[in-house]
Length: 369
Image (cartoon, rainbow, N blue to C red; front, side, top):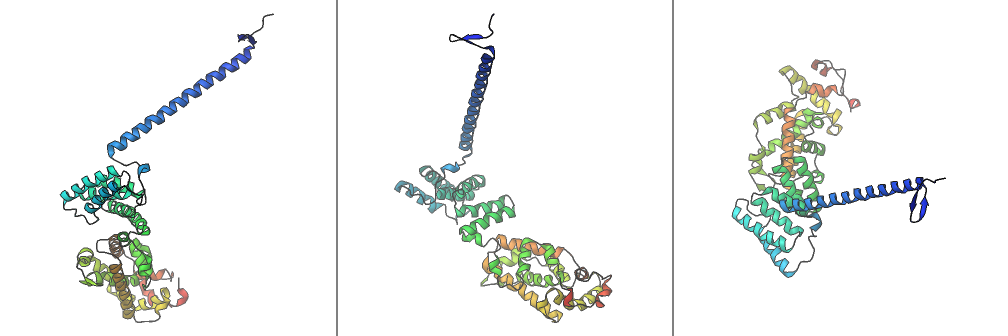
């Protein structure tokens, strides 16, 4: 009887065994081919990335060295030349000087490739030479090595180039936490307003949190009015600086809106009279620490608190920084909104049907929210 199978090195192998081995060999060849293809694809991608970085001039993050890495005497000389020309106060109007700084710092980067401080200085020079895209690339490379100044500059790029204030604030906060003093004046810091009479108000202005301010709008308006009117003064804090007045104070409609808010956003004279009567009775409901004071006294104390916070801001920041910009944006957003004193009162007295009812409702601390 003929046996099925085949001969393999002098031995008869059953057909089933031969078939199994054949399948295994085919699977092995398939796996090897797939592995070779994968390796080839990775190699091609690596070559493309290297070529792309070379084309764009973007430094390889792995090549970025620590700011404090020791340099040779020759490298030190080139780096010092770069630092001398690409200072943080480089005049952005002198493009020629900025271009010379770019050339010097480029040579320094070639001598000390990946040095984070050189990358930062090169970015400064490029930014002032009106080459912001190149500058941002080098700032990002320097930031990846923990350069605090690069974080601050990336904040500037986000603010002025991308017009993204939230992204800018994120960079500024990281830079301030890292120790950059320039960034510290850009962002809101609760400790600056630790002695504020109403720290929640100034924080809400910075966030443009209009609902928080409108909770007791007629009272918050006195605080905001004191802050905003102070911007109209020529003398703020320790120095005479008209920048604050000319940059942030527009007066006009914003001032009228704040004064109307202080009086309850009344739609007519009758409502206005009712609001004037009930306002001092509502204040203790929301702010028991105020006690039972006359309305003018309550408003005056809130205005002074707002003015005091303005001085705190001026002394802790700079005209043109992100902090005053965001606070003034919050003031303008608050001024444009409306919430009558009647609507405020209704949050603690839901039974109110009309503004005439304001006189008949018994106001006491039991209604406190």
